[in-house]
Amino acid sequence: MKFDTLQQGISFYENYARVSGFDTRLYSTKKRKSDGKISLKYSVCNKEGFQETPRLQSNCKKKRPITRIGCNARITVKLINDQDIYIIFLSMKDTHIP
Image 1 (cartoon, rainbow, N blue to C red):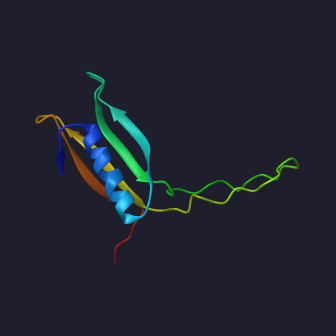
Image 2: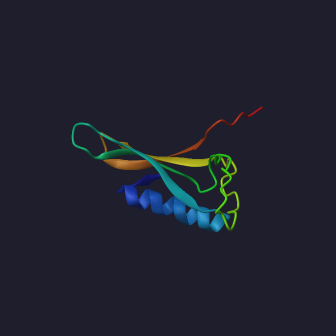
């Protein structure tokens, strides 16, 4: 899909995620060195990755639930230099398709 601005691409994926039943978070950004314009923006499922094992603390009153379970849903919004538009790449990291 093509978008005129980066925010349009991010908003599209956020709406898709909401309808599909999950939330997203912005993960990483890469900028062009020449003019500082964002060339790549990654958006992942809010349950992407794993949390470290919590350390035991004596003053801890309530344990928080584990929220990061290793979800692989992820997109990349990429700037196409010659056309000055953004496109979405779907990607699933560490996924093996038989």
